[in-house]
Length: 321
Image 1: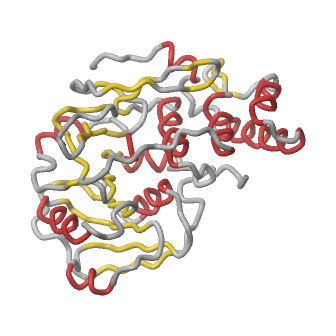
Image 2: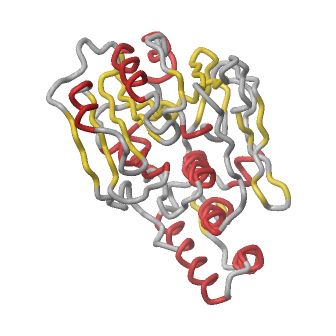
């Protein structure tokens, strides 16, 4: 595996960036939008961008997963107030969000995918004032399918046989907690996102990459809250996350499951190597190198931790604040 990144956007992806010289007229929301183009193949792109502009966001960054099969110059002529970002190499979902965060200047950013149906009534100023301009890391929406049926996107941390297996529910109350945002969708505090280091590009599974940043946020003292007043709907099929454990899940475990919190700091005990070696089934030399790299990463960030995984599970507040 590659080295665990220690700072935000340590992975510098070669990009093509195109933007016009216009700004959004009369923005009413102090929010940037990072649009992740991952699902529709550009089918709804024009309509989504039109609605985002009408919604009054302060800026819009459209990030592709790979070089597009559409005419970017034509899109730029039609939407000169949008910044289009095209990676010149394969990127992960987390890379796309990191890239978008690096291209905005606003304090808060709504991250959505091109599967989401966007309307000008998406957010009100009242919702922003009530939920966003506070000290939360991320406001996560209630998500519904095409038939407006609530999706089970509120997650509670549970551990079975030393493996994190979040439980899910579709019951969302005001300012309730969730472990992570489904499909990366939410309104993020940009400064906190950067302080946390953003998404780890070396964890290539979207599910484990999403869970990695989310759990890191919780262990470092941040929160994900939800509101039934913030609701988004999927345009087409709802994505089904692949939760299969893979080699990148091992790095997730080392960074988030192995650390132990003692005396206001975290560390990975050497004794955890035995269980990690057994879990990973890696050759002992490779397993030891991975273990020691994670141990160094935790040591570097030891005072950022406010708790460990067992403390988070034991003290989870499942009720609204």
